[in-house]
Image 1: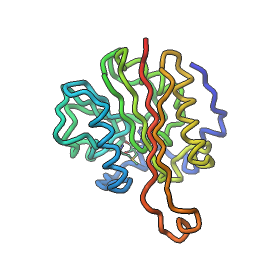
Image 2: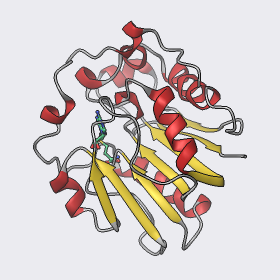
Image 3: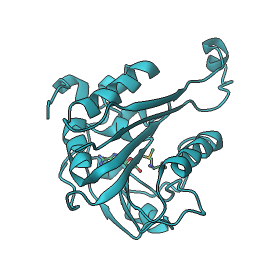
Length: 217
Ligand SMILES: C[S@@+](CC[C@H](N)C(=O)[O-])C[C@H]1O[C@@H](n2cnc3c(N)ncnc32)[C@H](O)[C@@H]1O
């Protein structure tokens, strides 16, 4: 694993313990319905029925297609109450990944690892992507999705200051830091509304990005 982010790139405006920030439950959606629909459609297309899923950095909703059955869905997040509301999880755990990167999950045990609108909060993504690799079965897939929204004070500096294209490249570089991941596949659906209208609050919907790679060996 190559640790390539510089210390300043990992900094957040709010450096207090993330557990304080996530102490109260937020039973809200963090992206619009159109984003969620695209994500659910992608899961329907790519995830295998009866497979084992790890929903990393989750909350009260996993965006999985209602009609799909899985063998097992493990959840992880920062708020017990949010995770207890999530109807798709067979089991979950709370862990601050900026304090402890090792996941309490066995090697080669998941067919897919999902991370939705949260990768921007990881201060040690290289170590976490190594963990994602470790827990995936060979042939398993990591699916990292994001938009342009964030809790600004909790996102790392390199993400805050990047363009949307650069964020895609950043997530690609997280995969590239771990030998054994395939070349990532990217789905990029930026906003079609010109920047001027976006400044006026006419967004045309949340942009949708997914960066996905397989554990090949
Ligand atoms: C914007 S929410 C997204 C929740 C969920 N994935 C969704 O799609 O609605 C960001 C999530 O990132 C996770 N998170 C943020 N900081 C974290 C940290 N330091 N360690 C572990 N997880 C963290 C929490 O689970 C939090 O709910």
